[in-house]
Image 1 (cartoon, helix red, strand yellow):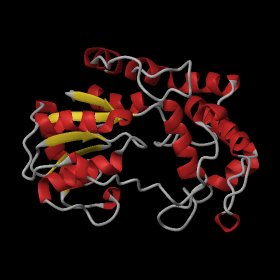
Image 2 (cartoon, one colour):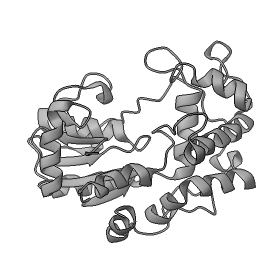
Image 3 (cartoon, one colour):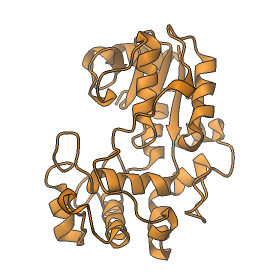
Amino acid sequence: MGFPGTWMTESESVVYRVVPKCACSTIGQIMFYSDHGTFFDGDIHDATGGMHKWALEDSQPLITQNVTAHKSYAFTCVRNPYTRILSSFFDKICGIQRNGKRYRGNLVPLLMQKYGIEVGDPETGFEFDQIQSFRRFLLFARDTIRWRRPMDPDIHWSAMSGHISTYIVNGGTYDKIFWTEQFNDGMQDVLNAIETPNKIDLAAIPRFNESEGHGPKRAHPVEDYFDDLSMHLIYEIYKKDFDLFKYDFEDPSNKMPIGEIDLAEVHAKLGE
């Protein structure tokens, strides 16, 4: 199985397990800058050099060697499950992707047909009933995760604990898991713990939000999208994420964590 979704600086100063929709573009650019003193020109997910990634065959032996020996500081970043799935919906389902097309080609037409989801149109300013469509999308997300129908779950809405566990199960150890909601504090802790060829001033780093601006804006507060049934579905899909990463399931309007992440608990529960 190895270490899918794992990135490492060329200097091997740090190892990062990517969790989609959790500031991964910004983190990747910080890692790139820390080695090269410049940002990658483009979306860091498209970079095929300047950083080791598990998706690049030549990087795999180096990543395996580093991670299994725990040679470098290793971290990941998590996000409130309510805002993460909303972000996935607006970006991946409603938005037009970097290539100018809809995400995954025939996915959106399938959702319209099978689940009655509307996604709006850039020509008309993305006018549609966001709440109704999002709740229908949730049913689809649950079906993909629970029954792998009508397709396998997508990395952008599959549970964070699933992404994070592959690293542990295959022999990796995390030194830090921090929250997107307290990004600067968490990322600073990582930078304080490692030596990088180029110093990073977090306050001066732009936010690389690659998904912004190509889909509709969220028209309502987070909590308006989640009725009792939606919350039930969210709990069914993300129970482990709420428990392990200390988010507030009872109150969708509270995006902030309500406890400290216990790394020993994460390794014990996700390493089984």
